[in-house]
Image (cartoon, rainbow over all chains, first blue to last red; front, side, top):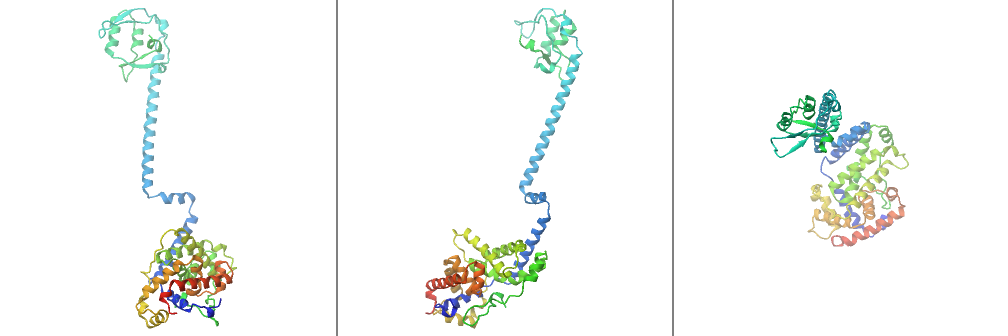
Length: 188
Length: 210
């Protein structure tokens, strides 16, 4: 369709007004600068290593601070847990050494005796006729027991020898109020 | 002189292709990584690219963003340009597709006309007053109002019709070049142009002399 045959000539003239709609002065210079700046950034990212590209969006953000905080807490927790496990296993090894040095109960010959305690006058405890002592105290159960009660038992039985006393009052440098009770005693 | 207005009318009213300098040497340099060459290409074509984006959206801010996107996309795709068509046709096609995607995304939103930043200082020049008086019988209508009505009418056209009106009647591209950009035949371009003008006549009848 030729423009000469255009039945709406005024429309074409009206549309010429649109050519006068121009952006603010300096706009095209700014646009060109923005485009070239973006292109230079894109080019720089092309040569950047992949880990750097991944790092860039999160660096300096709140997410980064939160992640760093979480990592610090995790490291502190791991450190504490490791220290606790190491110190516990060291104590257990020391205890094993102490018990391993004791004579076996079968060689001691514990007598079957009845004893009472001043803290529970009506209670009569029976010492086992024969203790099957297991030389691995780590498998036993640590039961808190007042030292006074334990001491009274040994005092009420002056005939018991040192070996029996040591069985009920195992040496412990860190916590003397705790004694080891074998599974056999616990079942009594 | 604004490159957008530097069109020529061939005998018979047909718009001839705008005089374009040979872009190929610059394109070759830009393809080999010469940023200054690409900057020069931008300098040559940015007015038209911005104009296309602006006339299709009627919004200065959107047009600025879209023109920037289109020029960056063109830079990224520059290695794929083989020179089968002219560089400005190829660049126009990228800009047109960028605007088209944008318009599809905002289809459900009310278009926002932004003319505040545009230059209306020429409103009172004798040339423009004469033009207005030849177009409209209404002496009370100002240039800003006329622009507003014109933009509203353009936005009521379909994207295809608005595009051919923009490329032909505003930017002065010939039918063949428009056909190449839109990847259709020149007959389709003429047909769309005729239909678009007919619609504009109906929408702006009150402002036009018969």
